[in-house]
Amino acid sequence: MDKAAFLQVAVVGLTQGECHLSEYLASGLTKRIAICDTDENRLNTIGDKYRIPLDARYTSYEKMLLQEKPMAVSIVTPNGLHKTMVLRALQSGAHVLVEKPMAISAAEAEIMCRAAKSAKKILSINFNQRFEQPVLEAKRLFEENKIGEIYFVATHWHRRRGVPWWYPLERAQEMCGGGAVIDLGVHVLDRALFICGYPEFIEVTGMTCLGVSEEEALKRNISHFSVEDFGAAMLRTKNGALFELESSWAANREDECIETRIYGTKGGILLKNSLSSPGHSEYRAFLSEKGEVVDYELCGISKNEKKDNVHAAFLRSVAFGEKPVCRAEDGLELCRITDAIYESSLQRKSIVMNRS
Image (cartoon, rainbow, N blue to C red; front, side, top):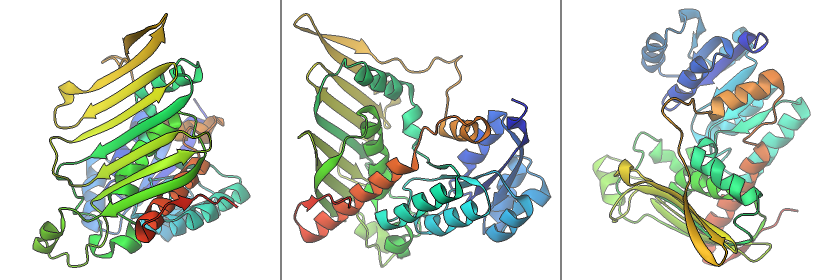
């Protein structure tokens, strides 16, 4: 632990980066944490809340990198800034944890992966759902061949009314890269792919639309709300399995939930996080045993047990050389998939995945 206690860390972008800061402080793996945000009021409000020293608060990213020389940097800025800020952090000698999506295109993500490899630094992505206990148990069942061959997966994240109005939506295409698909869809798609060993997709059919949020956007004086509040896709793997993705910032539906269903030749998985009614969440496995389907609960974490998280895992990989849990290569693959979904929606036809 002694080596880890000397880690100097930085968090950039505090609108959503506060959770990164709090987890780093709770990890016991840091010596000093610097924070950076262009909004001085937000910078000092959060700095005061977490007792960050005044000389560790910055409004200039370049100045922070130069003066602090952090070993690890969390980048929690708008998606369109990820590539530039990741490259600069890598050049400064830091390992990087970047928010999902990794980038707004596969082309940008490829540049980031090459830069990390060249710098011999860790580039990790904030795929935080990988650390949920039911997800880890589902992955274990898959790896133990209790689920068998996967033939269909449906993974959804739906909000009834939950457009992130604090995003830079006037410039959403440039700064965010898209809407519900690139914001919520990548989380639940990564969850499903992580459990199933990240199979290779060969064909993608996608649809995106601005279904119900345009009027509300105009009320908020957002006249160029050009990204989707709903998206869906069908993805075919090399082995013929189908993955269905649905994501919505806003939809006319009964509840808000995150749900992943996995169907295999030996068993199935249900992971349902009911955001409207948390007491109605379900985490279950359905395993074929002696000709019968037997139901099992996928247990959540107990109250007295400390849950691992993406931030602590990232710091351990920096300090102790542990294998990164959230690889940049997986972030790149998700960028390829989202590129294909948006291209399919634009062209109104299926897209063949090309990795050459």
